[in-house]
Image (cartoon, rainbow, N blue to C red; front, side, top):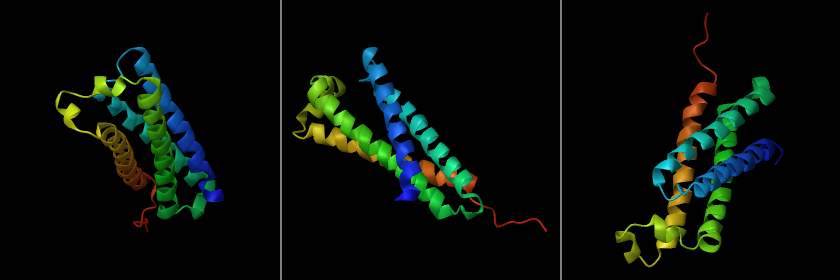
Length: 148
């Protein structure tokens, strides 16, 4: 559990930044425009990158691809899980008209539209986490091409 302390902390901070960004968009009335959610990838990516960087600094020569990958995925999954829970609470309790404003005419035909939206938010976060962690690990992994 001690190895996961840093990624969990970074995941909590990343989710707090994601929530703050969403609430700022809500104050400006832009939270129903899905194009603004593209910036979530940058926020998540920054959190993952910083986690892997600090993990490498902390472990030094003991840093491995597996430990960096685990740190990045843990950070992203914690951030995604917390943000998805916040999003569900916001959409069902705080702003009950949010999902109606978010949906288009065709989406109203689905009985489980809420579930589809929450599932989509979670899957987008998990997919972003996986892709960004794999990408960033290419920067942090040790090279097998040692100079002679």
